[in-house]
Amino acid sequence: MKGMLTYDLMETARNTNEWLGATARAMASYPAFGLAPHPFFNVVAAWGEVTERSFARMVAKPDWGIRSVVGDDGRDHIITVETLVTKPFGNLIHFKAAGRPPKPRRVFLVAPMSGHYATLLRSTVASLLPDCEVYVTDWHNARDIPVSEGKFDIEDYTLYLVDFMKFLGPDINVIAICQPAPLTLAATAYLAEQEPEAQPRTLTLIGGPIDPDAAATDVTDFGRRVTMGQLERSMIQRVGFKYRGAGRLVYPGLLQLQSFISMNGERHGKAFTDQILRAAKGEAGDHDQHNRFYDEYLAVMDMTAEFYLTTVERLFKRRVVARNVFTVGDKQVDIGKITQVAVKTVEGEKDDISAPGQCLAALALCTGLPDSKKASHLEPGAGHYGIFAGKSWRDNIRPLVLRFIDDNAENGAPMKAKPAIRAV
Image (tube, rainbow, N blue to C red; front, side):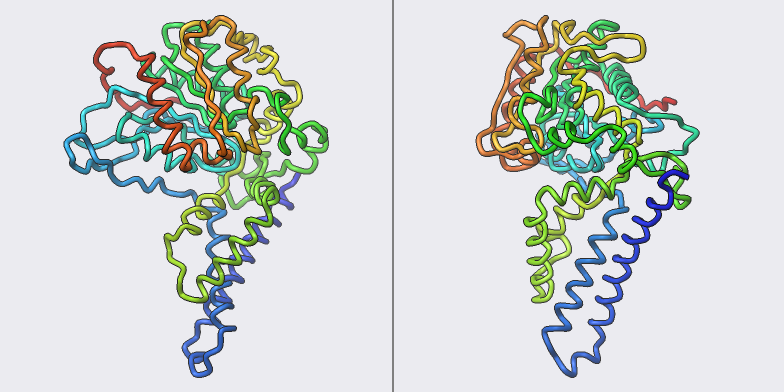
């Protein structure tokens, strides 16, 4: 079966490294070695601790870890994550603050499906919760989805976003971060033509590849030089029997993680070396800065093969969104049909994944939208991560996005909360 052996070999290698780390940590920590204290044993134990934790995180789904939020009344309100819409490949979730009246600002965060879980946006969610009702797409790991659930490509992804926006209602403010930006723009245009009364109020696109050719990066260069046949042969594997999605063709998260690390290999290598030395000296903590970052960064998920391949072929190679020729089924999506939704783009000056210009291209595609409903922002000195989760987001971008939402808000009371439903 195609790729099942290589998939299991990757999992075997990961499992073996986790075991080696645990073994080194346990053996070098024997009390007997205290009779002959030597830094060697501390370093071996530290190497084992860091190695075991790192490889174990690669198959763990992180928790959101958002416990409470301070309300306008000065009290802590407990946060619970409730599922509003359940679908095979992803859910719509809501961060509910117990005992707090609903906030008039309602924000729908579209999380990337690019190898990491939606929890990558944890700090983004936490920063918005004091001022907004926050809803997020919680995408599922493809390895855990049975083959009987069928395919999931970029057209299915777009229709999921359409369904989520229809459920949330026209007073919702959509924020798409990175990978989903072009498909979120397409979903908004789809609604504008098919069900205009269900369009969101505002759409903010942050660091997304609307037009990958607008500015070259390593990502766009890879998309140009590799053929689809090469991608399918080298990247696509079949889930092994260990998981519920056994037999499903996927782009493994472990391969994506390898690509992420290779882009900044020297920096990651130094980070792990420094952490081992800190652990050997007893200076590392369970929730220190290194572990907080890498516990999330190393937790990866598989994507369906059809989603990965159609993303590369249609969005990067054929540029169907950039050329405004994207289709969903037999319907062509015309971005020029967006005439009411205010659109804002946000880019980072030093973004090496979606370079400045790629996201800004969205505004030129919105030919039916007046200039008064268009806005853009280029954050000086900010990289890709910083524009949605770092200091640049907290200090500069978040206030600008909230002001953009308020400037395009309509007077009136917020919509009443809708009951949770289950959708097939």
